[in-house]
Length: 71
Image (spheres, rainbow, N blue to C red):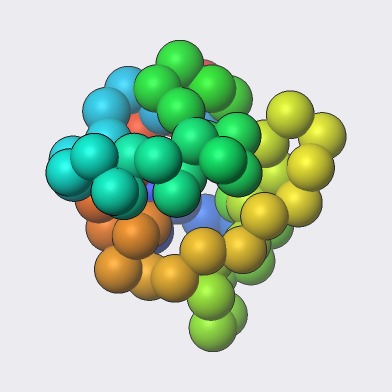
């Protein structure tokens, strides 16, 4: 499932990032890497998640390329 399919307060593990080097680098700078655990905070407007106790907002286009598995 993709990150955009999570419901608020659901936790998931990032299993794949389906994008090129540029996208992976932008996400990595925000702590969003394969193997990281995230919690969806809000999906109204930009996608807001918590990763490593940091709150990060990303666009829906980026979020659609992040494959996750619920935990």
